[in-house]
Length: 303
Image 1 (cartoon, rainbow, N blue to C red):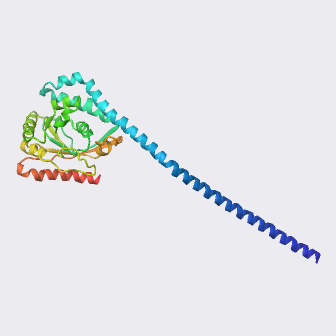
Image 2 (image 1 turned 45 degrees about the vertical axis):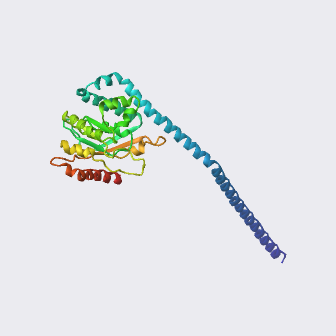
């Protein structure tokens, strides 16, 4: 009997030890869970406290980048003009030297500005505009100041811009702009009539014409493509020259008119096949305008 009792006691002791171990393990598990919850709550509180500081720091860095980057654009544009000043003064002295001037604008002004700002044009040519002394009406959607440089980059065929008179008031750039571009004052019917006369003179000289048919950049950036004005299509029909539409996909995102916005990167362009105006009259102007706008619209909304 004493042996049996001893065995029973031994078993009971073992059970008590096991139970004690189990209780200790449970306590340890509860403590771990409590500690884990504490550190999670601590981490959340730290994030709540310091996240706004991090966001403010990121905003500060972004705004600093935009300030320096956009300022660099104006420095770059002015610096290149100043470096080329003697050459530009000579080449703008007479209209017959415009082809040489165009080469300078394309290769020594527009291209360095694009790459100097961190933009990398990616041009898909469904049609290559030949430099064959034939005239074309070049049109594209208009989002940004960078559209001017991008258009020069895309066309080897020399063209003359038709643009708003207000640009001639810009320091330095405006002086050469009014010497080489066809300026239009949209408030003046006489100015609009003179545009057709000047455009026809350039076309007779074998130059092409470039017009952004939206007539300006919409203030509302949500507008994908504004309505087109008649000017480009009237000139193309009257002079019987083909229209070459281009689609600029990224200039709004890369370099909008808002100062604190934009980014470096690729600028995609599609150059579409020409649309003939042979045999068309001014009665076809509205249909032609909407046909071209529809082409650009379809590309932009699918991008």
